[in-house]
Image 1 (cartoon, each protein chain N blue to C red):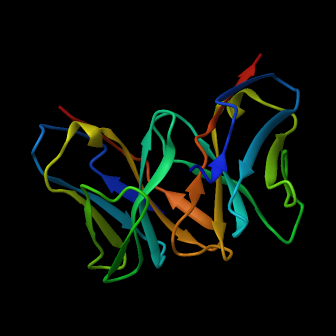
Image 2: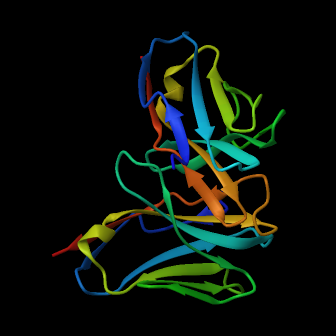
Image 3: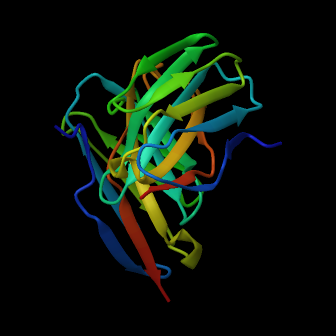
Length: 110
Length: 114
């Protein structure tokens, strides 16, 4: 029972490089989310999706794009990474009961 | 403007005593509240929740109290154990789990001392 799985777990990027973070859930949840966690800032919502083929902006969407081509996968893309995007990224899927989180991706942009 | 506030960045409690973590919110549309626990290098894990139609919810050593008029909730852990040392996030949503995600506080780092 994997729950929510994020890949990769760690990554170092150079400024201007691009990358995609993958989130996969096996709970058949409709709703999926990408958050970032920064020291002293809690968890802030980047983008979310209410179902396959749909995405919407959260609190801090700038510099990120997302896609939900399949219900079980939610991809977060950085087209041109900036040092301000150094953070820990968490994917979550949810039911009305609450959200289930992946283990996180630690991204450093140098 | 922060809609969910946890004003204590850290809290130190002796093992066996009660830990009380506080959370305030400003958005009156919030009607569902959750507490998450987070260990280093792991994702947050769901702990306990409460709907606005209740003022108390209990699960083992964990109890959440909600005071709607004061827009305040608290998490009580009794008795506190060393494994409770973690960062605790308060979260809120509207419409009982709306699609637009959860709004989190900044977290409180709970340290249980032996």
